[in-house]
Length: 267
Image (cartoon, rainbow, N blue to C red; front, side, top):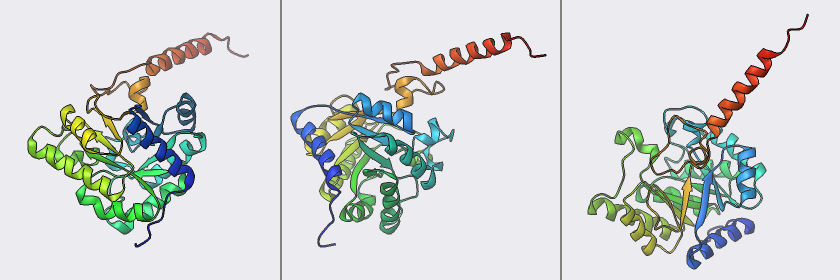
């Protein structure tokens, strides 16, 4: 496409703000959200980016990993979050096998945007560059994701930290630079050696958003369930739990059960 389309002005303004934060050294905050009340609470609290992540497959839908999440499920949850948000950038995850070709990527990205996403995210680097370019050239804002890729967990045999060898570190940098050159507005750096994430942050001019990648990035993202303690069955080692929603839910439920059981039967 000779004349690439541009994102809507309100989205461009939000992306410009993120770039300004990156350049000024102001940390960028990001959390996942999967429903209206969570999206509204996090937006009103002032979170910069709300990711409707395919992590919902595990912490909301009960799947073993993210590879079972479908486009209809992502659209459903994106609509709920988008209804709640007034200020944050709403970022929608493209689920597994939804961007195998450039045409498929564009069609599904448009579906997420129609559901309320203001930008979309796909996992990978050089191998998905045609998909990334197709999406960006049609006026859809894109944020990258390099390092550990959850959608590849089955083929890799588990969640493995990246960048442990010079070859791995160089490959991640090549991926991130290629995404930046294609027009990515930012890039998520997941589960990699902190020194590698720091190098990427210095080399790139777009914001880097870390998760399990140390503190030397332009921002951080976490799964909201890990922050508020609503999914007690698994909490990543890098996530600091700042509330215990699961414990409070159990306590309140037990109190309710006791209150109902104590009522005098009718008749």
